[in-house]
Amino acid sequence: MNRVDNYRLNLGSAQYAPIVVGGMGVDISTSELVLETVRLGGIGHLSDAMVPAVCDRLFGTKYVANKVKRFQEQQATSFDEARIPLYDPHELRLAQMQYIEHTVAKKQGSGGIFVNCMEKVLMGAPSETLAVRLIGALDAGVDGISLSAGLHNHSLRMIEHHPRFRDAKIGILVSSWRALKIFLRTAQRVNRMPDYIVVEGPLAGGHLGFGFDWAEFNLETIFLEVLQNLEAEGLKIPVIAAGGLFDSQDALHYLERGAAAVQVATRFSIAKESGLSAETKQAYINAKEEDVLVAGISPTGYLMRLLRESPCLGSNISPRCLPLGFALDSKGRCPYPGEYLATGTNSAGEKLPVLEKVCLCQHMIRYDCHTCGQNVIRLKEKVKQGADGAYILPSTEEIFNDYMGK
Image (cartoon, rainbow, N blue to C red; front, side):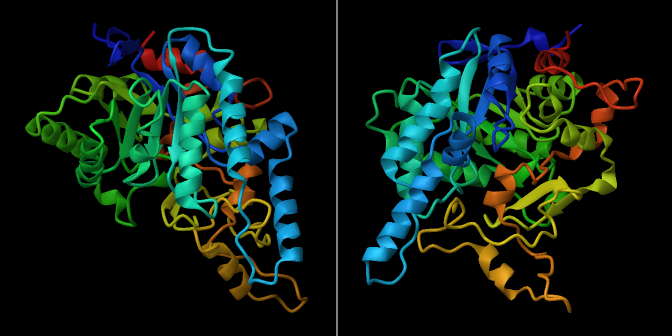
């Protein structure tokens, strides 16, 4: 009988189990979850979203506080108009390396430690900070980088002179052949094609590469279109299917149709090693179809899929652009502060809920944004309940082996 374990993902000379665990931020894909995936032979993604704040929490560093202090000192000594609070590039590189090296140093097994790098993490200086994050990841010894949340037109040029530019695996995440074609043109200019392509469909969790007509699209159509166009272009690049693959049968379906591997995440969000709280994991498992929402509340401009009970929704929390500011563009703008200021108060003078956008920085670092894939509603099919009615959380190994068909 055919099963997922019969397949392997070949990236150059490296061979992996065909299960790729996506990078769930912020630190939901913990070091422990990634290391377990690697031990089992698969690829595990860290997410480099908001790494300075994550390092402060994990390692007791002061990267965010240092940013605030520098900005306040600058404002006290300058008569110029207010400037954008920026992270120091050296400290940002240190944070990136510290976060990744913490995992790389503990690596055991034949799998790969990859980093999911979102272009839409702007930090007030989009190009400069993206370059630092990419270079820091390579310096830290990561096995691969998956470029996500953007077209990444300039990302390869940022690292083309790095000594590991052609050794580390580099892939791109897309939701259409059109987007991939744009990236491939930029890759040709630096003579560095991606080592793999992740095609993500509309049922994925978190930020989506689709508009409000997302339900009119399906992963299989997009996946086959990418395969066919790559073949027509004479390009032999492994394609990984992602978004809505719930079990080994879903995985096998795509492997039999030419996928080099599958990327999955939502099922691993409730693993024992996941960074979510036990209470939140129970909420994920209890979710019903009506509990899942696709909304345009992210300041990135992308739609997000998340649970309706997420504390970030309808919050009236004040903007945290000075200490955090991960969504600020190069002119210091973020959509949330404007929505916050435009929202009135009730008769008691209390701030009303801000409905159109959320302060993504503050809510993500507090685990208040419960992003999930559409198949979160099926999680209860795969877990057992204890005598107290609570669901028994599976380990990363149990979920991984279930996907492998073991």
